[in-house]
Length: 284
Image 1 (cartoon, rainbow, N blue to C red):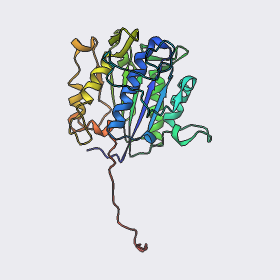
Image 2 (image 1 turned 90 degrees about the horizontal axis):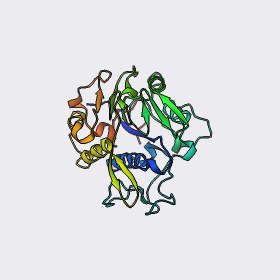
Image 3 (image 1 turned 90 degrees about the vertical axis):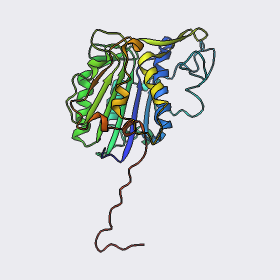
Image 4 (image 1 turned 60 degrees about the vertical axis):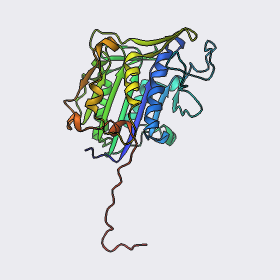
């Protein structure tokens, strides 16, 4: 089993503007899932342009839906966005991962992990071969992410990382990783697009991407005590459904995927360790 004692999630929607509504829904869908499975808001860093829910073109103000049935409002009343609007930058993302933040940055905007932390990093937006665009203004490269993860390893900021990307040519984003104990997956291989799933005629745009949709659909059958493994999740990948070749990279990950529980990354069940009192210490 995993040697971790706490779980964290970093969820990034790297897009802005109304026509990228689906990317916001992708990130909010993951946010809802990790919260439902027990990761508290204090352990979630959500980076979101946050410009769709109250956009003047939104026929359902204050809401974000991932289905044309609109049976579940992903925005709701209990959303805690940590980096909003123009705060969603490559610099801030790397600073969050590496812990290189200004002293004035509040605790809620910090990734306060240690060498017993399992970290789920999810990114969605527009990308290409070894890059992901941030708000049509700048790019982060596969090298940048690989080096940020290596800094985390050197500074003992994680036990294991699960890195997931939903963008065009997503699998290229984990091609440069070289640090240990990282499991990575993406929605599409080199030269492939990542496709949207549902359109809502009332909203007027696509409301979620196919890859994220089917992952969230699978996750709805998971609860905090589930024994489903990461291999079970990867076995659900189906080209006929998502129209692209989702990939998995596990050569840096030391545990068999059959033994890595989904809740090791998506859940928030703390592993409590009781240590004997030090010799000579007073008991209450």
